[in-house]
Picture 1 (tube, rainbow, N blue to C red):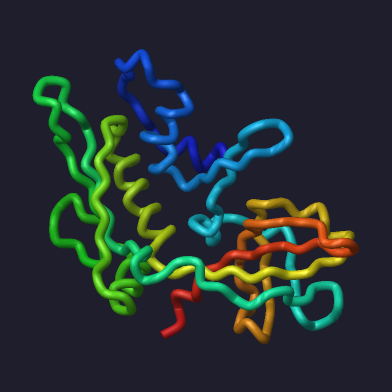
Picture 2: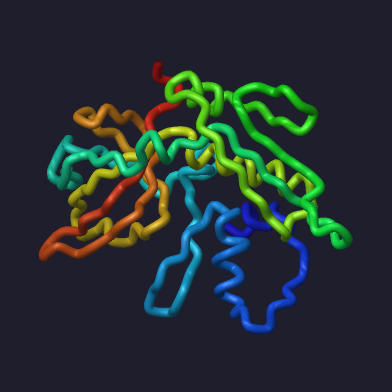
Length: 223
């Protein structure tokens, strides 16, 4: 996780003595990063949204669901994001001027490159072809680095260009070492998945078996 997050550079200052550090992070930094925060026995911990980087990460295990009793489907498939959640055109306004208080630079990731600050990605193009143009504009006072600005825009599109689905799976007790945030390579004929990377987003014990909730996106290569 550290290697990925260290690619982001933030800078600026805080001049509000009433603001707590956690409140500032929640409002200004975390929305720009592909991480979620979970509460554990040792306090708060970051969990990387690994679906964003699934092509760059190694799966920790390979599961074949439904082929035997080792892994069986425990729930129906649920689509967790809808059309209103899709983003395939992301603009970031950044580089706050200390004189006029204006954001002086713009980065953008979209399906086609029209301006010198635009980044074009194939994923954005696929998403636009399926769902139309879905835009978002984000302002930040804590980014001055152009590479970071481009990375934030690309990450927003990668995380939101396609809908996400979830399904729960029963797993035998020996697979309890798998943790929330891990990537699993899944094959499940009934679900139409073949060596598909899925992220573990839930885990609980159910009497004699583990129940894992897996999240995945539709295959962008399918028509």
